[in-house]
Figure 1: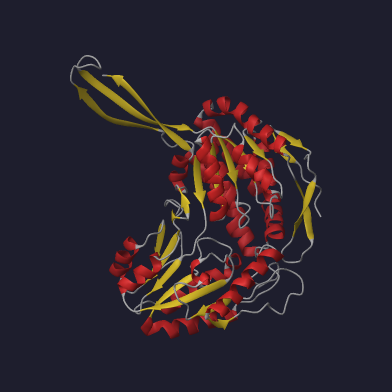
Figure 2: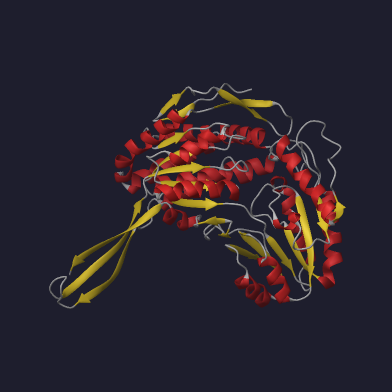
Length: 486
């Protein structure tokens, strides 16, 4: 087990006022380490440190900010193996996911926003000719739109990716000249402290990055309420996001919210069914379905409905469930015993609602320790079922049949969520036509792949704002207009 971790406040490693809590390996139930628990006073202290560091950091030349982010990425890469081992231990990710989708993506995001720090922040606007009047003489007015940093940003991160998620917040925020206070998820916070250590070693000035964690809701509440905070960037559940938005609204704090998802996968009868199954199957295999972008709600044209259900069941049944460190393991554990119970309760609810359990639905026979859930397929569902309407966040897929394109669009849009949807069709024109009608922040046509320069975020209860690529730089900035006489 690792030594007890400390908070990172104002450039100093600080003992937590409220002791530590255990971080548990979801695959083995062993204790990975002890994470610090900040007091409300320490959270406010971290926000004040970020506020004090903001004037100098916001005036730091972009070239210098870029160099520091690049150096931090080099240091994270230097310790890649140790970082991946820790990320796997505290998140339960498979080796491939911990290395390729967690640490590697985290490093790549720091490199991307090192370049992002050099992107233009000024845009010249067409001059305007003004007639003489109460505002002054006739003349020509020039104008410039300038992106300015927001100030102090609270970054509240999700448990499903302890490297990529915080990196996607911290790096663009710093690139734009903001300072940050990070509140990591209590289930897997240790990786975020290693990220902070790399930033400190790279030479990021004291107070620019602060990390304050804890298992109690009070820590997160303090990180949102702190008077020195100008913006909150949150990834997590819609219910928590709504509570954060209420606080931000009272303080007129800027928000970036990436919330829940119940992605619809629309499969037409001319689709490549094997390709569709491989894409939908990522719900089972990528981090055990604990990902908001997963295609968990599968809508299939009636002519191929049974064929698709059968292929998807075979796919799920072939996936090895087991210790994520074992060679060949594809489906690892979910994050905790409580979350396993939640996922299993949804499967049982689906049974009671009348869904047909095609495969899964029972706890795997092994491993004997750890929080494992069998990949589960629920067929013959109806739009009103809770398993269709609510985010389960586990390796559970529900299927519904449809008859025509209009019905498919209506079913897909009949959701409180709107993060990422998917369309599979052999007719690319139809794929794009349907995509344009879906009320979702993103749509994959014949793919579950992501373009990491495309805007990311949700419609409806899936979020507020957009990030990724240059859109993240925009998200962590305010627009200022400068006008002058020509």
